[in-house]
Length: 277
Image (cartoon, rainbow, N blue to C red):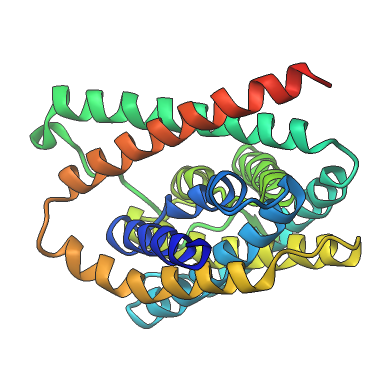
């Protein structure tokens, strides 16, 4: 039964990642804790494997399609590694109840943001959307022929990358919901390239955070994690095909509903444990 649940959960995560380009990996921790009986430390560590592996494969695919800027992704990821190290180390010093409550709070925030976006999208309609003007080749820092710095943009990158790293290290999530807007607003990438490049960032930060956690002696249940990861990767291809046959709006609405349910259940489970500390 446990093996079947891991495969089904991995399939749902993969379908979401393949169809929507992200979001599904945030479900890995609740699945590992509430469905597969892992501790919070094990789950947030194992989630990094699911997140990192799916992001890496997605980044390779996006790179081949010309939708991932490797250099910018690696640079953003390098900035985020400091936060990832701090977050991974901090996670080892807090009780499981605090980790789960923090994760539940994050789920509630993300679910709320997605609901708001759904409502606004339906009210505005696709016809009112305006293309974002970008300047992909406009650098933040230049050293030749003279030094120049677009410091406001540099600060956005630094702050966002650090927050993404902290979330990845502490809670075992990819943070794509922060990376993509940052790449659009701070680096001026088109949405399609931002989504692809964000996978490079997530792969880097996940690898760093996982290395720190394993070095601190936290080990996931490898059988469950590999089953979850394998199913996610395999069904990611099915999700990509599904996206060509089903409306993205319908897929997004279905995922939002699922995320709201998971967020509510996680909060319901974590609050009593937190109060008992």
